[in-house]
Length: 277
Image (cartoon, rainbow, N blue to C red; front, side, top):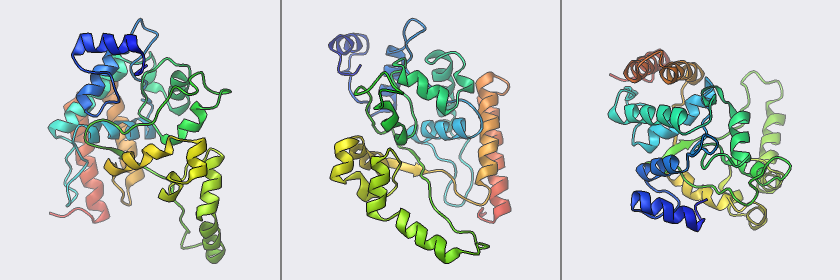
């Protein structure tokens, strides 16, 4: 769509700017609006299901708008102007620029809308890209690209390995981790459509030859920010899912939903001992 001359001309006529990979959040929002047409073409598809899908997706909106969850002392910053704008933008995109029912979409539903060519954009996980290049799952083979979330940053998330302290086979588990995360095996997993988290895989010639989108990951990671990681992260995700969903359906105002998220984050941080006065 971005490379289509008719869209390039139409977008410039409407907004006075070139249609290209967006770098600012305002530019992206204009593109989302432009590509929403006829009730069958959407500027964005969202995954509004609670708790994890909406919590993780909205985090991108927060970071893109220049917001953050907390300061260095774990004092909440979810009542900031940036956080309020992020939730306002999220609700606007979900209700006005996406498919009906997106408030309850999870990964599968949102993926399918984009895979059918009905959405211009989808703020989601890079490991979906191999599926978009699979003709058995996708009608947009060769038409999707990976790019950083425009604005001030995006959510960084990745799977990791851990060994429980109670494990009776800790040494064997460690040997497995060393093997499965070795450069050779990580590259093989990537070639099979997996999601490597080692940066050396992103520049592996064989991986790049099959999945060129990995080259963009270095740009994405340069501005990506982590989700709050502490003992009560799962509980906080549940709080976020509930409050964001209430704001989306109008059960709560944006200010009230964010105030609850902020107070619950601080309460959990205090319980964990990471909050500092």
